[in-house]
Length: 287
Ligand code: NDP
Image 1 (cartoon, rainbow, N blue to C red):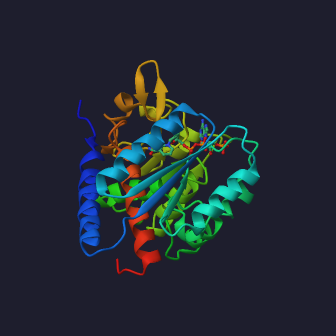
Image 2: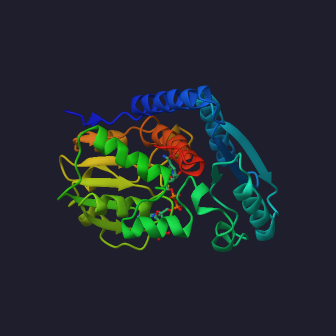
Image 3: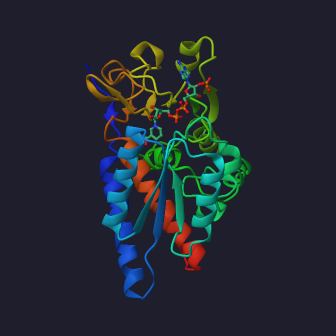
């Protein structure tokens, strides 16, 4: 049976990282300081620790300074506010990233306001999300930006297409829907209370799955020829899987992102790109 073409994220991510490394090398050679990314982790979520470690490695490889700020699980909103406020003032920090999930007892809406919107590398600050909603230039959250980058890279134009986004988180689903809409797709957002999901997904030319449910999207749920972007990262007994049943969907779809090796590497590359862009803006250097 014919299979969907694979939208590989590893190669474009590696190309992007190489171009960022070259730019940083040039900036350093001209006597500039290194872009600095500060990662904040609250508590001991093992997956978040792994993701922070991956970002540290990626930062060091392109010549960024990386600092890691570990808060205990019992840290309150005040501690996070103080930390984000301090990092926002630090001239050697150009990007700040808070690893999600943030523990439930933290008042995130309050804490995030303590972070400079100009240093917000994952586009989580209300000012940046608001600008995204208004279609103004802003810091675009890394995962949706990475997914859009892949669509463009593979010549898939969302204009005039029906797109369905599964998931409505502030970090993935909602910004993804806004970006697809800005790219002239007609967008439907589905969530855990959506009824008749299959009839909705079957109408889509592009489906983006970002729900955190292993292999949830099955072959019969997608329209033949549809483009499937799998954002999910789920650790299972069988290893890492996405939110899409890759083997069931691949014979139906025209394009599909793998997990691992699809959106994941692009997210990391976009953290680097967003940090570099924040650095250039803050240091007053042309893009
Ligand atoms: P959240 O848990 O914050 O949000 C999940 C969303 O999915 C919610 O809006 C929820 O609905 C919705 N949902 C849950 N079950 C269903 C269902 N059966 N049908 C339709 N919608 C459903 O997750 P994130 O957005 O942070 O992440 C989503 C996935 O993407 C996860 O697997 C995560 O690991 C992965 N991820 C991957 C990244 C990458 O780099 N590839 C980066 C970030 C995340 P409701 O709002 O009603 O609760």
